[in-house]
Amino acid sequence: MEVNRVRECFDYKDGALYWKVKKARRTKIGQRAGSFDEKTGYYRVHIDSKMQKLHRVIFLYHHGYLPNYVDHIDGNKTNNKIENLRESTFSENCMNQKVSTRNTSGTKGVMWHKRDKRWFVQLRINSKCHSFGYYEDKELAELVAMEATNKFHKEFSAYKGVLNG
Image (cartoon, rainbow, N blue to C red; front, side):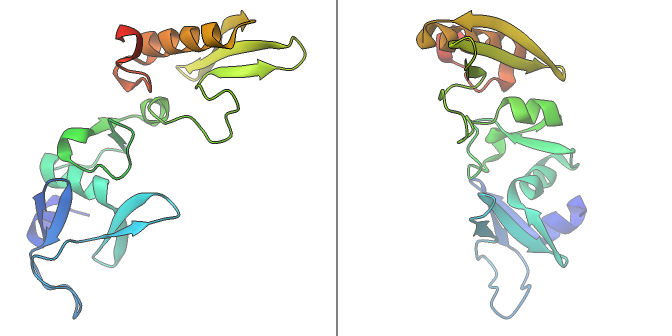
């Protein structure tokens, strides 16, 4: 995918792309490009016989290059406004992910330790797991996890803005 081809095919407005060319019989010039993929939660667009994630095409359209990873700053996969997109590494992109549906504590980095019957705080920093202690009180464990996440993940923290982070 090349920036010139993307700019030739699309106009950008408020987080969406609109066709500048008639791609197929069903496509109209000025029509919003792309469709929502319920399986992945991303919008995608078909360009030159390949399906592309819309946020990556928008990043390329504005910056003229395509990094390995494009992160949604607010964590919302459907908010494709250019102000919400930034280049990231795989690790940074993972830091900004929302709490997994498999997470039983409801807070990233907080787990119940069965044997010790206490809450355990652990974060991955630079590909290594770091422990931040065991806590009887879940709320205290959550605060420790949020503070550690804000401190070590900085602008990629899933809790930015929480605890004056």
